Structures are given as C-alpha cells and as structure tokens.
Image (cartoon, rainbow over all chains, first blue to last red; front, side, top):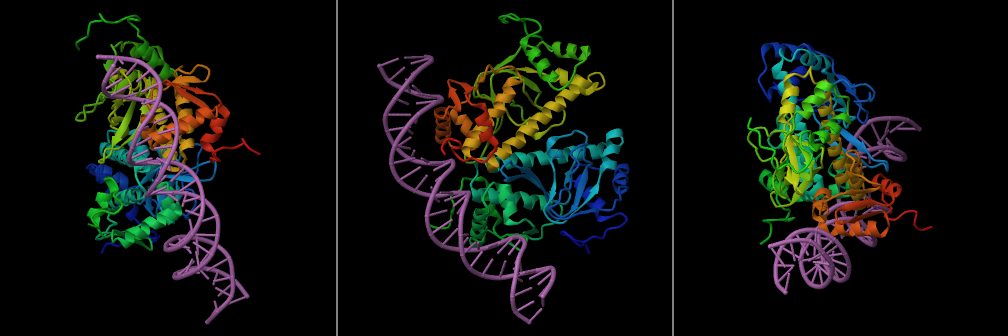
Length: 256
Length: 256
DNA sequence: CGCGAGCTTGAGGCGATTCAACTGTCGTGG
DNA sequence: CCACGACAGTTGAATCGCCTCAAGCTCGCG
C-alpha cells in the first residue's frame, strides 16, 4: 500500500521515498538509463528538516547548494521596502531550488518554508552531471525540462497578476496547483492538499487577505471549489477551467 | 550561404553599427578575447527590417533562430482567449531573442515589433560558441549574463504587477527603462526615447489606457517626469526613485 | 480635406482595499 | 477543568483606486 505523506512522516531509510520522488520527477520528462537511475538512488541522503517560516536557501554568498523538496510546501518571496511581500512561486514536493550551474536569479532566490519542510541535497547529482554530461544525458535533459516548466509557471504568474480578476486568478492558481500535484500523485478524485493560509494566497495572487477570503467563500457557495482545512476539493472542474481563462462574467450560466 | 549584395547600404558599410552594438552589450558583462571579437565582427550581416506590429519570431515549429535587436522597440506579448494582451517584456536595441540552445520558453516566446525594428541573426555566433565553448568562454559567459539580466527583469515585473499601485508601477518601469537605455548610451541628461503608446504601456503595466494617461499627466503636472512625443525626460530622479519602491502616499512631502 | 491613430478629459460604477470586530479552533498552563 | 492567547478564518461598512463608457481633441498623412 502506498502511503502518501503530506507534510510529516519523518521516516524514510535506504532507497528512500525521497529518491523515488526525484526519480519520478525526472522521468516525467525523459527516459533514464540504468546508470542514471543508479546515480539518483545513490544520493540516499537523510532529509533535512526545516521549520515553517524559516529560510531554506540562506547562503546568499556562495552559490547555494541545489536541494529537492521531498515534503511540505515552500515559496520564493520578494520583500518590498515597505514590508509587503510578493510571492514569486510556490514549491511543492518534487521541486528543486538552488544553483544548478547557471546561477539563474530565480533559482537563487531565497526559499522560505510555508509548512514544515523536508529537503535533500542534490549537489552530488548535479555535480556529477555537470562533470560528465555524456554519462548522464537523460538527467541533464530532465533538469533542463524542469527549468523550462518553472519558467512557464513564472510567465503564467505574470499573466495572472497582470490582467486577471480576483476570481480568475484564484481559479487559475488552483488549476495550476491541481496539475502540479496530480503529476506527483497527490490528487485523489478532485481533492488535493494545499496547506496555504489565505494570507499566503493573498501574497501570491496580489490581493488582500479579506478579498481572498471572499472569493474562497464565493467558490464554496457556488459549488465550484471547496477549500477547507488545508484540503482543496474541485467540485466543478469544467466551470473552473472556463472561469480561469475566459473573460469573467462573474456569474455565468447561473441566471437566465 | 547566399549573401545578399550590399548595394543598399546607406553609410557605415563593413563592420556595421550592428556588430558594434553587440560587442558593446557583450562587453558589459565580461572581457572578450581577440578571437571572440573577431567572431562577433565576422557576423557582418545586413539587418533585416520588420514593420511595426508584425511578428519577428514567427517560426513556432523549429527553434527560431536567435536574433539581436539593433534598432527599434519590440515586445513579448501573451494573448488571452478573451482578446486582452499582457506584455511580458519589452526589447530595446541590444536585446536578444530566440533560442540560444536551451529552448527556454521565455526566449522562445513570440516577439512583436512595436516600432519599425531592425534585427540581425546571431545564429552563426551562437552556433560557434555552442560547438567550441572553449574557444569562446567570454561570449558564453556574456550570453549567460544577459539571460540572467532578462530573468531579473521578469521577476521585477512580477513584483510590479503583483503589489504596486499604478503610480509605483509607472515609476518603476520608467526607472528600469532608464537604466537599460543608459547602458546602451541612449540617455542624454535625463532624457531617453520611449516610442511606446500609452496603450502599450497599459498592456505592459496591467492597467487601462485611460488610467495610464492620468498617471502620465499627473507625473507631468508634478514635475516628476515628462513624457512627450516618444521622449521621456526625468525631471526629479530622486523623487521618482523614492516613489518606485516605497509605499505610495500618493503625494508626500508636499504638504505639512 | 477627411480620416485615423494617439492623447485627453469627464462621469459613473464596480472591484478591491482598509479598518474593525467577531468567531472558531487549537495548544498551553494555571 | 477552564482560562488564556495565538492564529486562521469570517463578516460588515466605508472608502478609494482603477475601470468602462463616452466624448472631444490634436496631430500627421494620404
């Protein structure tokens, strides 16, 4: 029986769930050779724990070592001089952070745990791939693909913030999370965990806490989506998708 | 293979202004060896003309060849199903577009000319650097640095759209443009060209045309910035910078 | 001359914000 | 056992930033 761990579960020995998760994520993009699989499994590191609210990617000086999130949620915040925060992206299990050789500012952006988070270092894997690219072409391709996926999410984020209404932003975000969580097996018939406070959602969507709350209650009242106790249940996927990228009639097909 | 005849070249033939601009841009980041300089100068291509409003990066199928903007302004638009546009970034002379080997979605995003634009292909240079990285380490580094700069601008854009007021967005953008244009020598005591319509500014900043107009007139009235006839003149740099990243009191230090 | 593209301005309305209070649920300690 | 504070969520009221609609203006250009 496959136990799904959301946040807790500090066990994981030998060929841990951590490396399985990494394998799974890499294989989304491409096929790995036996040598490559072996490299991944040899990582067998003990996950490191990070308390909620703490910084995971602190060493601003040198290039922070690349890490993989194996449990819990995190984000890349940007703090403005006046104290407000804009969250650039959220990280869920299977996501990467830190330098993978190109010193990209986004990858280097500080990462902060939103829940208790467990990570493992993938520095050894990245290093091996960098030194002998020819031995690990699959991993190299997979890492590049993950980079591309992250970048696409960034661009989507710009569109959300730039020209969507609050309802659209929320639905758009929920659909993105639905898809990302589905790809790591966290969605069970329309439900998935989302341990984000409404405050965090507000910082993510560029809205006020109060207004996020109103949107969420609206969605619940309309039997679109129910968010309750850190779990999202999508009640009407079709209508949500419709709302996410069409103009927002604010309430369509309901009246008339 | 087929070289176009140089018959139409009005003045500066041979080592054109185009390659000078590219050299200048690359040297911002690092030092180039004589061999590298030679490679850049050997590009000596005839710039290609693109009419305003046309797509510069059309071939969606294969990887579009990398090109350098040598004149005019362009942008990377994102069109929503309902017809609205969000502009992800603007390109000014010295900026790159198209695939530089990593197939990044941002670089691959379609580019549309906002004014008449001239570009040259840098495919040969990129190809050469890719095949013999060891011969051209400086160019490789410079290209990576340009990538990073672009990405930082993207992140800034998210912050602008996510949690800044209209006045802040405008001032933030103007300062970014000021800096970028200064680095290619287009700023002369506080003035620089900005051939963007207020409509385009609106799509860029996630605002309505009307409101952009009001902000612009406000700035003019307050002797902050004057935008007139495609030329921006920053009248009070300090106050503009203050406005750009502090909280917006809408009018501070004026009363009391 | 008339046309269109870009800019300007007014009026009215809605979406989102802010301020503020109140609820419910935890975990802690008296 | 209940009191307590901390925290997340909920709700109301008033306000404002920004949007939409709608004119009118000013150019440059065929």
